[in-house]
Amino acid sequence: MKKRNGPYHHGHLAESLLDAVDEIASQFGIEAVTLRGCAKRIGVSPASAFRHYTDKRALLTVFATRALNQLADAMEVAMLQAQEKGDDALHAVCMAYVRFALTKPAFFRAMWREEMIYSRDADYLAATERLASYLQEGFVRTIADEDPCDFSPHELLAWSAVHGLACLFVDGPVAKESDREEKLQLADEVLTQLLPAFSQ
Amino acid sequence: MKKRNGPYHHGHLAESLLDAVDEIASQFGIEAVTLRGCAKRIGVSPASAFRHYTDKRALLTVFATRALNQLADAMEVAMLQAQEKGDDALHAVCMAYVRFALTKPAFFRAMWREEMIYSRDADYLAATERLASYLQEGFVRTIADEDPCDFSPHELLAWSAVHGLACLFVDGPVAKESDREEKLQLADEVLTQLLPAFSQ
DNA sequence: AATTGTAAGTTAACAGCGTTTACATCTGGC
DNA sequence: GCCAGATGTAAACGCTGTTAACTTACAATT
Image 1 (tube, rainbow over the protein chains, first blue to last red):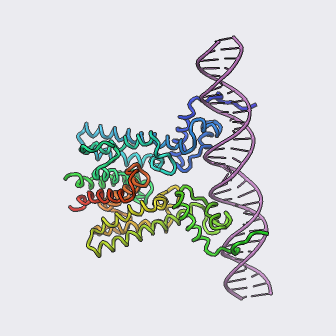
Image 2: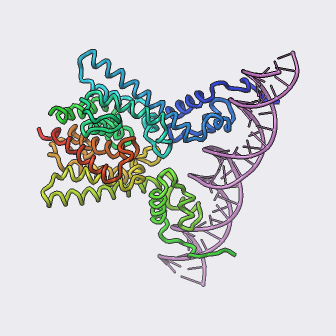
Image 3: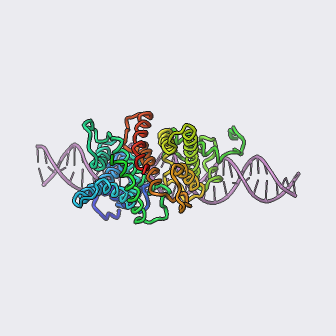
């Protein structure tokens, strides 16, 4: 009685929903992501999502975690490349941070939208710590540093500067009429200004 | 036939709606703000809001603008006090920035939620420029600087650092278990690290 | 190979949301 | 005193997240 295009059981619904969030967020922004919209895109009923995620917030938490790990991947690549070339690793990692925010603004927003995700989730927190660790690579760790999320003022300054720059580009009034390359050029100059703070 | 508590015409509905956004955002977060909820709190029908704002986004834009100006007010006070005492004005302004974000996180979030507001709105943009001007006070303006939103790398670094710190406190994993005073103490240390970058 | 328990999907319904349309009421200027 | 316009209301629309009751498919046990 029904047009049954696919089999009754989808098979990879949890991941497919994440991909749907990915696509809709990329195209229309993270605020446009809808459970029903994701379900329709996959060709599945709206209620099916609740077999795999307790609620919308849980889905977005997993999505934010995936986005965090994508950013961390990009930072890792940048760090390794800089180490090969003998460039400043911290600078390279910071540029990767800004580049990711400019390339995937919806992902970058989703990462830090505390009211939209379960920010105490273990996997999410692990991803933030992984992210932080790449920013800390450029610094000599003190003995007391056990918790990777317990930053020295130096380390926190580096994260703050690059995070603030990315946020101001993505959601702020800075360089609104500039294209991506101009913003990256500006980011390079700003981050270069930061170096004297670390050279004592 | 109806319990008519107040007069038919409210009189200050536009401002009252803003106050309702203020209260609901303060108490339950900016994501919990609802047109119907605001209307109910004032004791007015849901549709009445559309006589004063074209849509929800317009209301939130005005709210964000008001929040921006509140932050700018706090920064102005901090700047004047620092100038009286002979303290570093830039440092004082930055601390006011972080203090505001920690005291009114929902307001701080609303300011920069690009997908939730009309970020090209003239009043909103004017408020961002006013905000930026207090951060630029500490710097010698170059001749070419006409547009107050056209930053030098130095100025943008200052804004990025303090903005990123505020964002990481409000929406990030940094110092999550610390109270407000501990965060402010940490902010003070971080911003102090920034000074060498400006002393060349 | 048939049975049966469970995982994974559907359908229909719910309340609440933003928004629009048509209507009601008040207010200020002639 | 009347009329026009501004301001508020009621009812409806389609959309949202979420739940409950039901159906289907698979996989392990006998």
